[in-house]
Image (cartoon, rainbow, N blue to C red; front, top):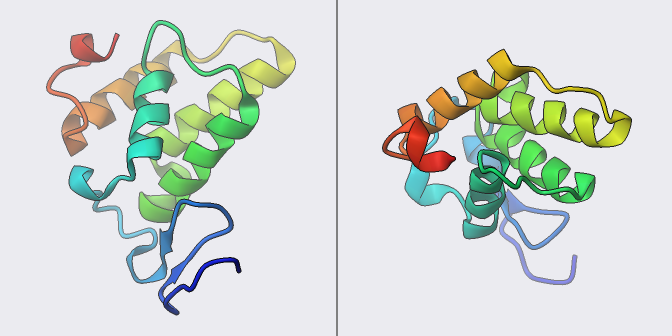
Length: 115
């Protein structure tokens, strides 16, 4: 590890993982790192990220800090990465659930503001 980290704050890149707050299902929008917030909002935009590694970085954060494998932000990031890798259409219903989730947790005031 290149930087000093507390035992409950580890990471494999510059985005910390708070081990004590993993898969709590309770996401406080103020605690979402700016880079993850930006990637997540980008996934909801008209021009989402096209680098699967960037998308997977956000997926990892949402998996750890959200609801695990059932977290809508995690699921959409994985779905988008699959779309990028295979060039197959993505699941529109899953996208709508993702947008609703972002509004529910407070990352946006309304779905239309994300697009």
